[in-house]
Length: 244
Image 1 (spheres, rainbow, N blue to C red):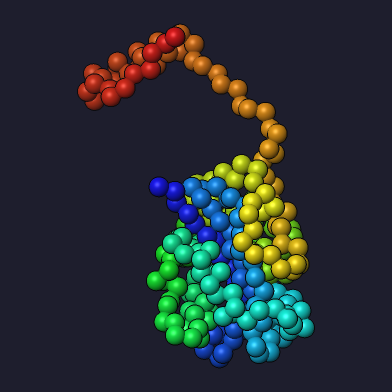
Image 2 (image 1 turned 90 degrees about the vertical axis):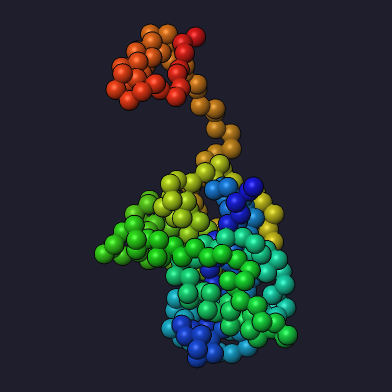
C-alpha cells in the first residue's frame, strides 16, 4: 500500500491563536513512497482581521494583497480533501495544528480536529532528537543537510513546505524526487500568488542510466570462500552468490 505524506506549512496574522490570530496562507506538498510527486495545494486566505506588523516582516503578506481572497470556510472542503488520510509532516507541528484546529472549529456545524483527519509528524521534535543542543530551525537544517534555500528571503507557506519536504527526506535517509518538480504534477489549487518554487536542485529527466557492473567469476568465488569461513563460526549462511 502506498504511503502518502503531505508536508504542510501555514502563515498567519500573528503568533498566538489564543489571541484570535488567523491563517492567511496554506501550502502543502505531496510525497508518495518517499518521492515528491509534484502535486501541491496552495491557497491564500483572507483572515477577516488585521495582520500584526511583526508577522508581515516575516512573510511579507499584507491585508491589501489578501483583498478578494477566499475566507477559510470557502476553501475548507478542498483543503481537507487534499490532506485526508495522509500523514502530515510539519515543522513545529503544535503551532500549525493549533491554527488549523481553530479554523476548523469555526466551521458551521463542524467539530472536526486535524488529528481526526491525519496523523502528524513533527520534524522539529525529530530534529531535536537527532541533533540535541543544536539549532534546528528550517534554515539551520537546510545548512546541515545541504538543501538549497537561497530563494527563502521571506517565509512563504508553499515555499517552506517545498524546502521542508527536501529536509525531511534527507533527515530520514535520503530523498528520491527523481527530477519531479512542482510544475510537473497536478496542482490542487493555484491562485496567481507570488512565485513559490524553491529553486531546489533535482535530478535531470534525461540523465543516462547507471551502468550495471557484474562481479567477476573470481570475485564471486572469493565471496563464496568467505561465506564458507563464516559457516564454520556462525552456522550455514542463508544465501549464496554464484558466479556466472
